[in-house]
Length: 217
Image (cartoon, rainbow, N blue to C red; front, side):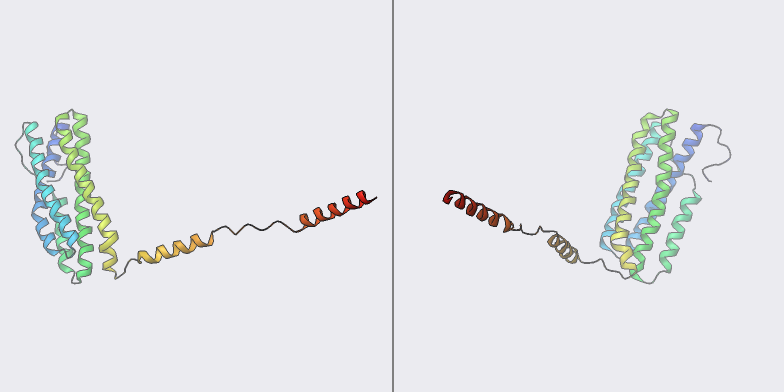
């Protein structure tokens, strides 16, 4: 069942359906993360996935609190979108043999999942505020903030480590940059002050000679 399904007659029903959608999605993500942890080769990436697995379990608990506040039993509704994203991630990871490339592929797959979650949570927060379900807004916002933070961390890991490693490129050494900076600073030093021209001294001597002649006269 997709988000826009038959039988939804009100905004409250649409909100509940979207809540069931993300509840299902979080459970599917919880199942897929251990496999992503096992496939990752970078230690930092493994730790990041492991931490997000713990966050996902906490997010599921918050969603259950949302259901409770609404007087509803927690349940999920099948979500073809998240199923397709996870299936595609598994296929891509299974086709890559080069270990240097696998981490870049896993990050891309994980970010596709994160962007889906960010979209869903952002919508749920907006709808909850509009409908008047203010008691659940903070719970949904916490999940949204965690997903956004995870997405930023994945971007940083991709740019600093996974992507350069995948193409066999190394970052330039920091020492070289410092040396170049020192060289630029050295060229901007001020030149030493020049001595006063000798003309002034000559003029004073000439004036002294004229005064001597007047006295003699």
